[in-house]
Image (tube, rainbow, N blue to C red):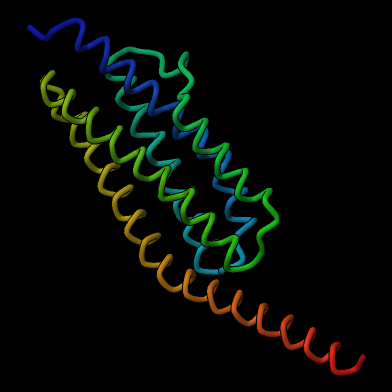
Length: 182
């Protein structure tokens, strides 16, 4: 006989994930629009489609539990989405903005990986093997997304550093020219 308190926690965790994923459905298009790198923009757009699938999997689990997925707001994701929005409002441009977006997105992925991993373990303990399988599939996709972001970060961060160095060099060269002209 499953522990009723554990089942209550399980449903609560699933509602938290459902809220988190729905918040991402609203945030990812904004991040894609802000990205200057085509590869990053495409990555956000692909993850948006994946996220729709994550919501569908959660809805399938809720249906099998005869539970309503709504009624809880994921405060953790709310904070992460807010931080991502702040990056977009800071006035950064081009590759530097992309680096900030990648950092925000990776924080989201790590939060989701932790939440899906923990919830999957509860599903297993409750004997919900089909649920665990669905949760593991989402966890694998979140992990792959994080790895893609990590790989992108290497190139884009290098590019951002070069852009910054070039801007400093040209502004310094401009100042020297001004001094000589005076």
